[in-house]
Amino acid sequence: MIKSTDILSTLLTLKVNRSRKAGLCVACLDTSARDGLCSPCRHDLPRNNHPCQTCAMPMPMSGLVCGDCLSNPPSFSCSIIPWLYRFPADAMIRRFKDQGQRQFLRPLVADLASQLETLMQEQTIPRPDALIPAPMHRKRRLARGFNQAQVIAEELAKQLAIPVASSLVARKRHVDSQRGLGRDERLKNLRRVFELKGEVPSRIAIIDDVVTTGATARSLASALKNQGAQDIQVWALARTPL
Image (cartoon, rainbow, N blue to C red):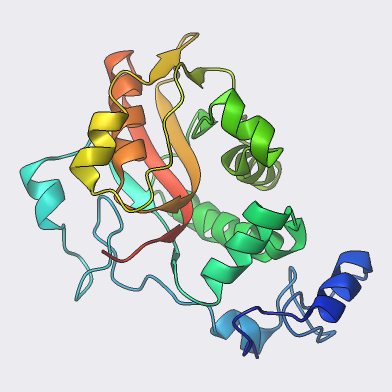
């Protein structure tokens, strides 16, 4: 099971990075893993068991819509976000974002894709015409080396057979890090930040790694709806409890 706040020591990290053996758990190196995690480590992931039906903010019980979505409905219809941004999911996502270690991303994306496929087969959610990764300004992308939302979207596209429309939306200006800001401040920063560069599909899923206040999803969904999108969903790996 996952115990260390670092997930793996430097030695184990190197071993996981070098290994391409199928069935190896990225967290504890157990050989009985499925999609990169063994059953005990997968059990350790903090499930978002009672999400708001619209924005996936954690709620006290299932089937509720949060007060924010009731008073100020977003342009997206629902959010599918399986985990809370807590240990060990947060550490796995940071290993991917900060160090580019994609093996920590693989089990999270695989489980998200499995959940999404089930929901679409049951017609609980419509199948999108395209996946749109939350765009990153070129300055930030150059600094990080990749857009994490783009990587997640491409992996989901492979597993769900849904095209990625990454060139449809761009950030036309750079926004400083919004860490520590509230939703209203984030929304203010994001006003008119997105530029659409083509025909907008009818059904869209916005892809991101972590949803904190939902400001990026709200702003992007609003821009897409103004250009003709009929149904917009938000798919992400984790939701930060507020």
